[in-house]
Image 1 (cartoon, rainbow, N blue to C red):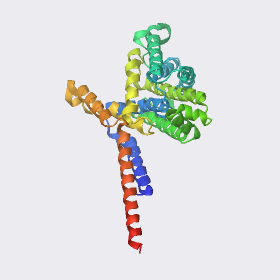
Image 2: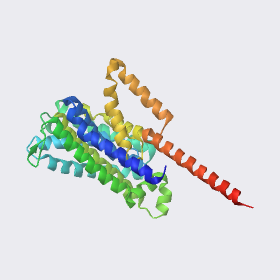
Image 3: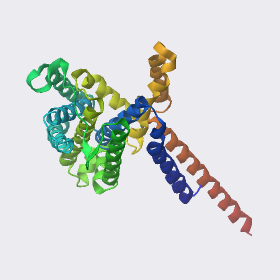
Image 4: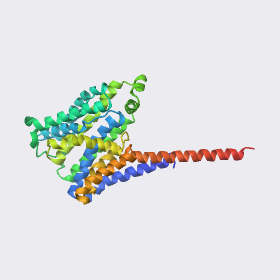
Length: 334
């Protein structure tokens, strides 16, 4: 298949996916719309983690904590009369600043050492969520988080709030796509592949490490700010270490370092368990086995399987073209 044909199929697939996300929820019940909204919100957090881990190569187990910081920021402000947009701006700024500071240990430690540092921060954030009653409400959390009105239009209904979350996800996806295709994105990839070589080529590795953490953390805060009005109740157990591990699994299962990886990974982590609920108490066991089998078969995730298939087809087509050209030259030779 030619490059033009592959681009056409890619655009066609994108159009079908967008049409499904826009029109399919019109026939869904409230719970189905809620699940799709949760997918959109978690995808934003996974995109941020993919930027930090997949593109910049920095291991982080603190993304769930940033989702919690964003959620509590939105819950505290909106329950005191602030608009959600203002809460989102504050959550972005706060998580960006904390992510920048958290990036400093990455300048000295790498790989599993960095994972332990971010794990410690995630634990610290959870303790603050649970124990600081004056700020977070402690174990009871913050209830009755209101949904916003956008240009005078209330998003109280599940469908309207879903479309709001989907719109924000589209903006984030376009912004991150522009970022990864910019010189910054290429610098992130160079940092992931070989930091020493990137430094020798003039890449300011210190700045890009900090920016990778800061931007990824800010997207986690944005996800949390959207999550709070979605569920209406913000409480500590929702932001325990399990959430950070789930977000990490979304990135890895979808395909770390692929732009569409977080979309596919979040769909697998959010929707697949729901589809397996007919198995009752066995659905989580089957879900875990399917994830383990996938990672054994394809460590690059679901998108990696497709990419490997396309690379194999292109290599096979190129080999056939070379063989045909060689046979043609031999046939014309005297």
